[in-house]
Amino acid sequence: MKKKIAFITGITGQDGSLLAKLLLNKNYIVHGIKRRASSFNTKRIDSIYQDHQNKSKRLILHYGDLTDSLSLYDLLNKIKPDEIYNLGAQSHVAISFINPEYTTNVDGIGNLRLLDAISKLKFKKSVKFFQASTSEMYGNQKKTLNEDSIFEPVSPYASAKLLAYWNTKIYRQAYGIFASNGIMFNHESSQRGENFISKKTTKAVAEISLGLRDILYVGNLNSYRDWGYAGDYVEAMWKIMQYKKPDDFVIATNKTHSVRRFIEIAFKRVGIKIIWKGKGINEVGFEKKSKKILVKVDKIYFRPNEVEYLKGNYSKINKLIGWKPKMTFEKLVNKMVDYDLKKLKNK
Ligand code: NAP
Ligand code: GDD
Image (cartoon, rainbow, N blue to C red; front, side):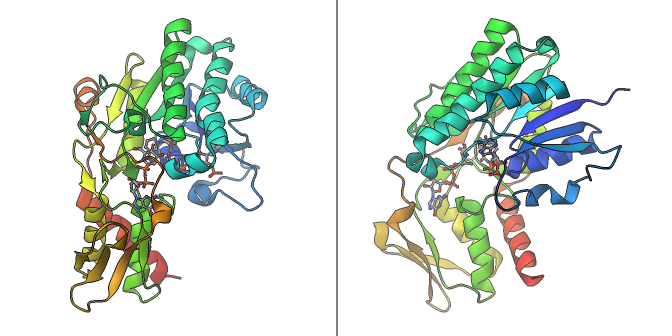
């Protein structure tokens, strides 16, 4: 049987690397674009790298960028993928306030470049397209969110992603392209970027417990996120692409936890009980036993606009596709702390 061919943007990122592994295990041929960088940016996929000279290789990397229309068209035309996963993005919400134009170009127009390229391909009717949409598009509604909830983005990242979300729907309707949105709530893993709160916390906790660092500096302790496991979410992406028709699906856990709770659980894993004292930017977290201050708030990590509360409802994907998250929140935090501890101990 002919092997399926996948094309992944963002293959060097958290989700892209996990998805590439999943698809290789399913016997796909996987193509991905990596950006030119002055130092290697492929560490998340080094374990699955296959030499260019290997005739039967199933992982093939190309230089590419979501800001470069013609090269995207060229690659798609040559590779003729069955499935395209658009995971490439400037994915940090706070940084989108600092680099708004770039974020809009990559996250918003990048999606349009791909969709428009697909619409001009002879085989457009046989290609499937997945767009990595985000719960950030909902903004600040403080209620449980599903596919029928309205969107009220509050950051350049979220508005760029909303542009991509709508164009995915528009190209589905206008050209009959199989184009689906996964509206994903936060998902983490040991492979998470180090400036997201989950990884930043678990890495700092591991370092503090080994005496390699004194303090974890954070921003808003009181925001809530619906945190799931990235391994479960890439499974959902693949399942959405195997569904009989294109559609839009929330991918979430139906639960929400505060940043404060995340930090408490991470410290608990290394035997430290955190007690909070003070208010606002003067709040600190100290170790109950030693009274040492281990967590401090720094206003540099606050955003000009904050999404205070996110909680999704995954009923639709569960009912139509049979997907549900497998990993619990506590297990996820523990797994991330354990990974960071092991990595430091093996250094
Ligand atoms: P990530 O770890 O930040 O990975 C982003 C990927 O995009 C990296 O491979 C990055 O390349 C690549 N990229 C950045 N700019 C690019 C450009 N101009 N052209 C081509 N590629 C570019 O993000 P993630 O957590 O895996 O998330 C994957 C996708 O899901 C993103 O679109 C994100 O916005 C979306 N999403 C994520 C979550 C979540 O909680 N993780 C939730 C909802 C939606 P480098 O490695 O070279 O930087
Ligand atoms: N990054 C970071 N660093 N966030 C902090 C910090 C800190 O020091 N202190 C508190 N926070 C708070 C943020 O203000 C936010 O409310 C929450 O922790 C989560 O922040 P991030 O981990 O940076 O993730 P995010 O929710 O902004 O965005 C992630 O999830 C989106 C889906 O909801 C990213 O993965 C996006 O790409 C994704 O679309």
